[in-house]
Image (cartoon, rainbow, N blue to C red; front, side):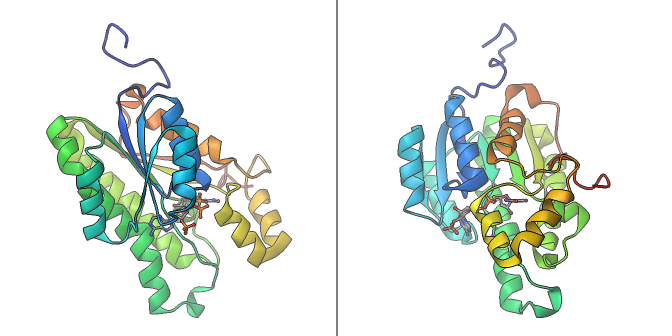
Length: 252
Ligand code: NAP
């Protein structure tokens, strides 16, 4: 801690963090980054095999959880909380034109990508408000800001997350709680690998060429943005969406 009471840049010592979808991909990199920075991390993931393995390796705890089930989320946060930092990272996508999607698809995509964010946020907020401190970091997508051919419902849910985050920022500033989004571009994770398995090399090329930097991002590049937003040094940033997308949307 410095004389002003701030932790050193990049440190989260003593902070308790709840990272959803933390068993693999971007969430795993965030959990790892936070644990390395000194935070006590709880990984919450559907995947009850990979979560504990990662947790053991990085000195975290893992719990099996479906973020779209609000009652289960409340019980888990009651048991394992309170938390200073929430990272709403769990997400699912689907590659299909909108006319090919069903109501079941809408419910599933919105249930995990948007309702899951609401459920986890409502579960952690009372303790953050009581403590007068909190950092909420929501992983949305550039698809929310740019649209996505073959990802209309996913984009709608992720756009909802951005609007929700701005409202959260407004309602919770007086409690010392910040709320921000990270909007990744194409990041090399199991989710992206699955999309490429369906869409093929053409999809991979299109995603790469949509970035100014002409490459995929790495999960660690998203994790470093999350670490910054969780840090003491980001205390004057709220209601924002930070793109980690190699300049996607600037013309390609
Ligand atoms: P990923 O590789 O599929 O990892 C997501 C993790 O979340 C998986 O471990 C998954 O478990 C878990 N999960 C899924 N549904 C869940 C639920 N209902 N409750 C709890 N955990 C759940 O995905 P990723 O690429 O790391 O993506 C992480 C976040 O970044 C997502 O919100 C995604 O939309 C966003 N994002 C990713 C990209 C990209 O290019 N990768 C781009 C933009 C935004 P299972 O494996 O058991 O399903």
